[in-house]
Image (cartoon, rainbow, N blue to C red):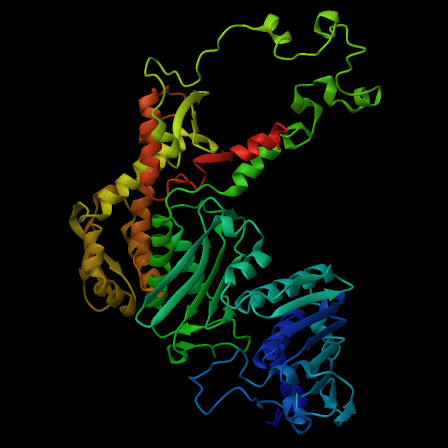
Length: 616
């Protein structure tokens, strides 16, 4: 077949395959255009999951009538200077509008602040219509109908309307977090209306709460760090506040929402010791650096980025999050108390089934329907309101029921009342041990329940880690060095990290052009597949420029030792031991969760307890 020039329509449809993957991609491009135009109010309307209709209306600067034809032409943009490395806007490629117009029916109606009237242009499957006058307020309205009608094969790869509508919601929320001063509205026949009112520019946490839920600020830690011109700010969740997936991990680079493997791996590494493998932290992190230090022109969708110094960025994220976790002290997730209250309430999870209420007939629907529920003094055979108690059970009438003075709840094996100062600590004073595993403690305004095994497991683990990483680890010498064949570049990477690996007990050296000789391995690992370990390290260094694989293996052994060496469930503790455990927890970073990511304690505020008993 002879070589020929592709038509402009075909070129645009090929470009659309890269830029416009699904309706959410259209919404992303159009909302970014609105933000680049200085919009303060953005309204998004969809139908049919975005496949039937997408309409984005903004109050930005608008497009002048003579420029409308250029706006729908490829590689025409107002956002890029002559330097491709100095990108300070969300859009810059000049491909979004012509790509959308090549696979859908697109119309753009716009009016500038200085314009007397609006103008409109349309594209139908790549065919551009003439510019015509229109009526509109200041700003721009972009309407997309029948998405992918010009490429029917793409429709087969679309998910259901609900799934596409959910993806659009996620895109709008991600963008909204980075622009708190902009009001966003998302509505349509295929969804309930989402409104995100504008907040103060410097009150980013308020916008995050709108998107992630009102409980996030109470379970979040502030992040603010800077290293070599790269600044990191935002908020991350405490270890006991997690989700089953990573959808609520928002990361931004110079205000641009991104989904980058390096950044996701850094977050996962920062929480490696405090979260189980199937749980994920909630984050909203903002990286700010010079545009020349990051390449956002990696993929047409602009979701991937490349950093000039990825090791610096990863180290900044891991270090900042770990420092925040260490400096936050001991904090429980508010969701634990909420779940505890729900379990206590009648009709809540604990009483969803009669069998869960020990079969008591008062929780039987048929019994409730048979007559009045509750105590009826007139019908009760044990009614106390006789003549002798005609005035009710007042102070005088209660004398006959007096059982004498009660023993003080603060008495503990002859130690008298627990020191008052312990009530002012984070975990309070130990009051009792329940089921030989749970310590019940009291503070000035709350009740604390501690899982003694999980708590002590974390304490032992942190002590082991401190001992491991505060000095070079002991190693065991191999009788014969093991030669591991590797690609030349992998052997070079390992040699460059040889000093760091030696601190962990792994000593190796170059052995020819494509191999390394391993002479010593960490004593803690015992019998180990040296070849697999070395290759895993080489792969991680290639991806992230770190040697965390070896560190993770050593930490895993420390976690196993801590699990078997901590206080076991079923062991009776003395009051002094319980209080000592509480004080150690307060002094140990990360003690709010055990090595497996489970919470070590739950705190129930006095106000919540009073609500359970109807006192509030």
